[in-house]
Image (tube, rainbow, N blue to C red; front, side, top):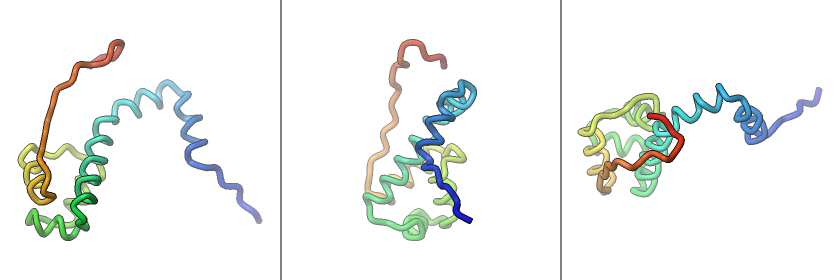
Length: 102
């Protein structure tokens, strides 16, 4: 039996045509952005999750949860993360794009 594999990008294009899916996806954009920024900072520091956890005096599981985007970390946690990755935490407020609701 031969299975046909469809690239995830092709499937995602179809999903994005569904307004309900698109709205739910867009609502998570900022959480995904934070998770991506955390992963990028850790990678830029050349640290594994275990090494970062040791530097932050926490567990690898906690770092994995942070990077999954499933929760919103406190500012204190982000400051500890920045210190451990030798980066600087910057938080900013930017104007919304026209046509977007809060």
